[in-house]
Amino acid sequence: MYHIILVQTEKDTKKKEVIMDNKKSKKENRLQLFQNQSVRTHWDEGKELWYFSVVDVVAILTVQQNYQTARKYWNKLKERLKKEGNETVTNCHQLKMLAKDGKMRMTDVADTEQLLRLIQSVPSSKAEPFKLWLAKVGYERIEETEDPELAFDRAMETYLAKGYSKNWINQRLKSIEVRKELTDEWNERGMKQGLEYAILTNELTKAWAGKNVKDYKKIKGLKKENLRDNMSNLELVLNMLAEASTTEISKEKQPEGLEENKSIARKGDNAAKKARLEIEKQTGKPIVSAENSKNILDKPDNKKIRGKKR
Image (tube, rainbow, N blue to C red; front, side, top):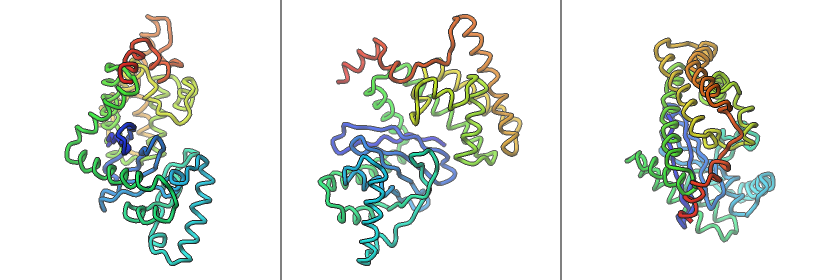
């Protein structure tokens, strides 16, 4: 299941959309933002605890832009604290989180209480603001658990602040709902979050758009950016049609195993593919284009929106 979480800094000026995957797995990995710097986090639903990537926090506190430098700093600090008999370091454990190279790698993590203790060991002017941020992260999680609609409201505010049009935002939020229904169905079919979801998404995209995800992002000049955040209205609509069709066919056919689910993904995209080809025939131009979020936000109407927001 997909969720949206929007994290604000202590100044309430920066927000970040974070999309979560597969609630049923009881593991939620998120990318959250502190003063425009990302922190990888994990929500343990069973323990009801946040876990934070320690090296990400150390990078912020020590003002290190280079990940490897921050990692080396943390390794030395960890060694020193262990020699001192620091129980916090001893009790820290590791979880798989998305690394810079796009792979899931074991990462040192700490819960809120452990992190607050570790912060005391790092000389930094950002210590107090970071403590406030930790408290806010927990508070917003409680708020959105009690009222999930808040997450969507915050998503709307964030996209408006970035300069997206209301029409695009409505399509984007709808696409999140459609995607959530699809991943729920994949979960029911025994597909695993991560690699298998990525394989199925790639099949689905390749079928309707004629491009796999990697090539699609290359056309738009993207690297790690979210592909859907860089789709035009029409691209979002066709992608939603493909995902919704795949969900319904899967519910009917109840495929087993990765290969059968890949076959369903390709079949589900037929309607979207036909629609794309027909529109391209009528307009004489391709649906999949180099237009990305920068192009979208630079359109005259969106420039006016951004000007008003500023």
